[in-house]
Image 1 (cartoon, helix red, strand yellow):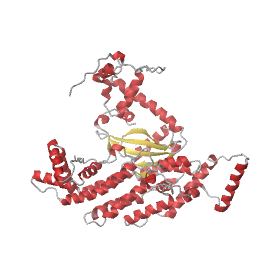
Image 2 (image 1 turned 180 degrees about the horizontal axis):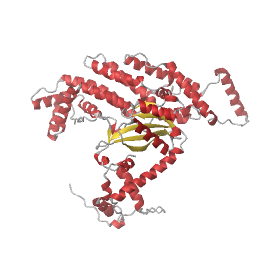
Image 3 (image 1 turned 135 degrees about the vertical axis):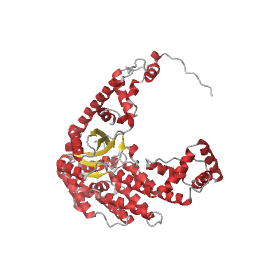
Image 4 (image 1 turned 45 degrees about the vertical axis):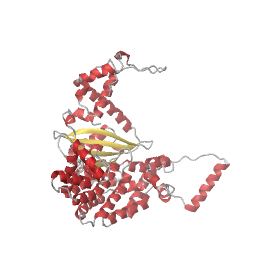
Length: 541
């Protein structure tokens, strides 16, 4: 291929073309340094990148001749300055926010074995959009010390002036501890008691279930993983297998390797091997002069792939950031229980199902009432749908009912009444004072309806009316809960406040890149681990 030379240009001429308007570009060294801090933090580049001579030459020659590289010690100061400014703005925004905030706390470990705690805020803004903000990333001087965890989190809430906006707290399995939870409960004394207070990270539970399940079929998975890696690690072998696919009447395919630290890679590997197990077995056993792979390996692994698929789908839902996850928890757990029920009598999966179902049962029995209310507040489900989900889960797991619908209804009623007492005076719907003939008709019709149906509360009306009866299955699948509540906020002025709080709850504390990992902690990379503590905090926002 001929290389087409680029036209020569004078760097000083690299300026935006005139648009005929007064919007003329003005180069600002200060803005460039601020932007560089944010860019390097986002893409996880080393701090020395700002001080790189080659990067300076590139910018000067092709973008902006006036650019000057930022020395490393100056760049560190810029990091602190930008972080402090962002923090001040966030404190102002949150302190002026009029709703409640849910929090998630999770532990991180650096490559140098130093522990950190991250505190993240979740809330739904006035436009019914889900928001997430990392408040702090602080050093834990004493690993897993409950007193220090409590003190650090409370210090952060006070710094941001949001103690009075507290609604719930989600912990990962490493930070969760009865003692620390009791300390928060006793200090904060939430008006709703401990019913809404502490939520376990459901992704931690799923990771634990998957990890233990994979251990039970380790020998079978490892043989397939070794075969796929053997093919994947050589372009020559990849081509041989690609050609071999044709003799089996299949299109050529490249298979995805497995990585021990991330179980979703195991799922993707098995998924890529689906319908190609004979090709892989034929090739691998022939070159190894052995019957390493057998039908049993594939049967067990493909069977377990169905578990991995439902766990993968649930994890993707629970780790969502900008859509509510609390209202989806029971639907996803019901799908998981269905797969358990399907394989519970299968000879090869009896022990695996028993073990995994037991761990899921423990999670279900520890679920706080707030999650049941979050499901009810989804207009597709409500009370009848919740009852159906609970019954199906109990049947699939061969368990007695792990909760009582009357108890849930009582919690729902008491929660709504508490919100009504607190907010009814500030959410009254304005009544028109017009005396037109038309308004008189509507007023009289409203009185007739009251005589026929009685005066019902917002909650009673919400539960009685089927708002989704005209929706197709596709509509129900793609339903936007937040958009629905935004549309119906005026019709349910008090209930919508409760809905906003319930839909804020995060079901996972894990960041997207850690959500499938089978290790114990979320881990800072080596570059971040070697930075000063104050720089680490500024970069983790």
